[in-house]
Length: 560
Image (cartoon, rainbow, N blue to C red):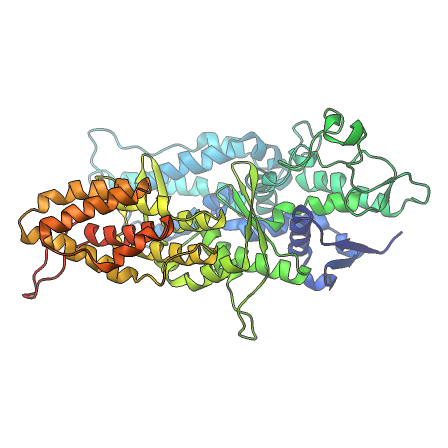
């Protein structure tokens, strides 16, 4: 049997599998040489357990299992204080926990199947049937009946003790955690085989994984392949047949038996060896997932760098984030990871980096150029200020940090977003940002335009132009004509939106004529090109849209 296995970095999907494999077995248990990974067959011992343990350790606090067992701490708190602070809200929380957590999750068929593997003597279904909500009658007041109520709560707590202890046991975490992860994380990478095959005959997911991915590897390594006619599509190693394809990989593979038109001359050659198939099964461990969205940075310069940048991103998202796990974490962690400084104090610099995102069950690809990395690095302070900013569009909450990063990753300028933010500021849309945040986005956009070699005019002083907008606004207040400002704002924003330089300047000329003031010379630059026009125009509109200038006597008028 071959005792050492060699895997080379290749395309992004295999690289994600390599990172996932290293996360599972530990970098210290393999040998890395540039873009090549070497490991012994001993590393694969109990690999199915290592596989699930990795996901459990990384995603433990996001699991339904955690929601069940973490309530124990609250129960102990009320017990220690003898229910002194237990009130109606605590009762509502208890009922929600019973209904929306315990009964909701533990009645799912996928969990029920593994109950005998945790404890064959435990009758969880009977425990759940006896567990009831605690309700006050319509005429009963909490304070009047709380002594009898507390006795009922204590009895419910005793019932929950058995359920929580069952789930929190070593085997409870092992099997319930695995089942939870199969359908919340692992199925984002692949499906249709092993424990994700609907008609699988195995109840134990660990055994299922071992049979589907590990045993074929050992059989393959122990087989004489000297007379093989085929080669692995990925590593070019000899294989006996073409039975193992990539059809199980989400959004990548196809059924070679049903879709022969996908290969050259209808003759399939897309087949893998069991070793590569095992690596591909580790793709979900290479990506970092939050709320169904995944991210992977394909820095293929070396396996070491590939691992480092993705580990840093994962830890930033799942472990070292003081604000908890949320949908914006991947973007924050991405910026931190690709702009981090190395131990030798040099900036983390690369040529182009491929970023792979898994969103809405599809992979999306972006190339982050070296110039883009510089823009992100130089804008870290501004970006940090946008983390908690956003607006509500219908039922959708939009975060500005995420929006800005997505635009930059897609190599799109930010003018459309800036226009929307200024417009929303004038309307009844619920917003969670101010003019200073929009000004920061405009500054990032100016850096972006220069970074992609747009011929901008000579250095534009955005603060000065914004100040002109404030003075313009004050002029109308001084003439007691502030009621004209919304109409002028509407015309100027429309001209900016459709890139109408003449219309913008006509409105500006008429407005300044009304004020009997000259137009600032800065506006001569608007005729250079549309990017310069929009940059100056939106900077001016930020001044018009912002708060009024403070008066010399210390007073000021706050506006939206």
